[in-house]
Amino acid sequence: MEPMENFDPEINRIHTLECLKRLMILYDEDKACRCRQGQFVALYMLYNVDSDDAVITALHLKDTLLYEMHYHGVT
Image 1 (cartoon, rainbow, N blue to C red):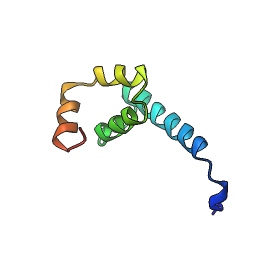
Image 2 (cartoon, rainbow, N blue to C red):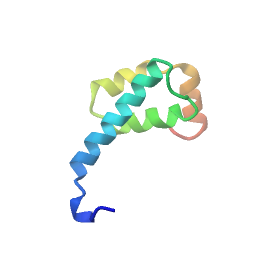
Image 3 (cartoon, rainbow, N blue to C red):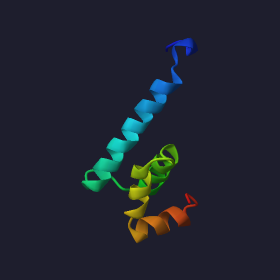
Image 4 (cartoon, rainbow, N blue to C red):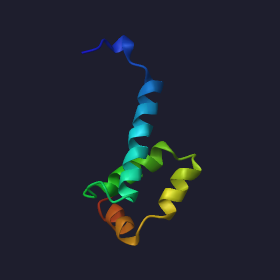
């Protein structure tokens, strides 16, 4: 385990965003399990609240996914 002094929050933020973006691409290509898609999309949108990409992602969500997110308290 690395010492806490080695933790770089900016590198962590960048890697988290890269992973979430890749997951969004996999969802678009139907190559990822959609069992928790609503939660990951919500997390992606929160991480990118000031990004046009997040707004576009939100606008392209299917109605069923939006219902799922609302039903499970994600929105």
